[in-house]
Image (cartoon, rainbow, N blue to C red; front, side):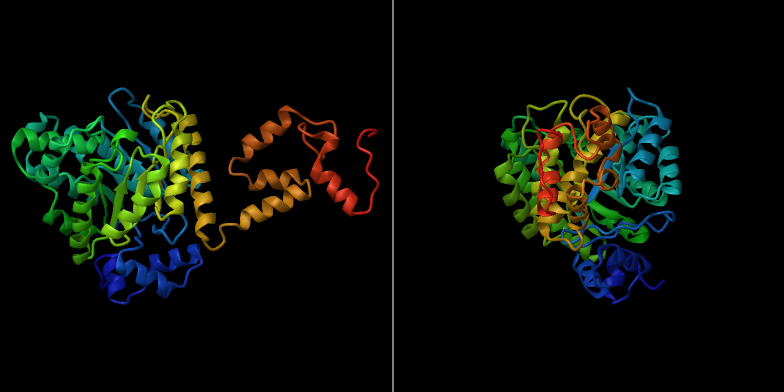
Length: 432
């Protein structure tokens, strides 16, 4: 293999096996795809050691991809449950899984994922360092932070969130401009606290690029200063960090390291389009990975809906990668049903955005669904539904008197009666 990363291959004019797979999935000319990868506008996260991966590309001109967060915590230690979530997510068609484990044998779980799971696997090494070294945050050295990153790379992780935009400079700006909800990023708060306690600069700079290049790990530039409330959206801290991430994107590309840029967070609906356009300009089209955005702060228990609203608008305007949000957001670690609800909401948002963007083939299933509805072909409708089980259950719970209609309209069914009248039949809906 005479290339180091997918970006390096693209710059050299080499078409990799992974590029061929992605081009086929996206119904895209492979030369066009290669150019986009060389420019950093598309990434193919695929660690050289993750051999069971089902390869996918991420970029605003491709189908919108979805990430599912899972992992153990001090209060939720069941690894088998987290594996069940991962398997369910894969079966539901999710392209990426992020292991955010912060308790227990994290390496064992991570290695099991990269050995057995075909989804793109992401991690946040900052979390794991605290677990792995099991000592006060202040005592972790800069060298140890970097060593954890390399450990994750060796374990086969395809992309890593690295909170490198929060440095002494941006931290000082944050302290000078008070926010309502401060720093809500878990990784961002950890590295901020470490810098404050030790007086040292953020350690995740040049050496980390060599690690990512060696294993072809895609760097996901974490947004430590993402807004955790509508009030903080688009403030100085967020934009200052985004400028820093834009500069770091260029540095990564110089070493042929693939980059994703992370985004908000909580943000009012009318700010989302501008935020996406600013990111695309500052980061020169690097794929944007968004959490939500959540368009209101008052919907605990329903934040999968607030995130889907924001995610659809963000992706329609150029975000490439949606991090799912579950009904449990802000409340607890999600259970299996929460995961399912979060995935479905994100899939709806991603699909709606792909239709809006004009992605090739995005409307095909919608056309087939409309044909099935016109023909009152219920089995075909269930087959095409994002959640066939729920659709079938709803119909069975209110079985209509006439099998070809639903209990909402019965013989007043507009589709049924239009089909009949246009076929020359006499329709008498009251006597039937």
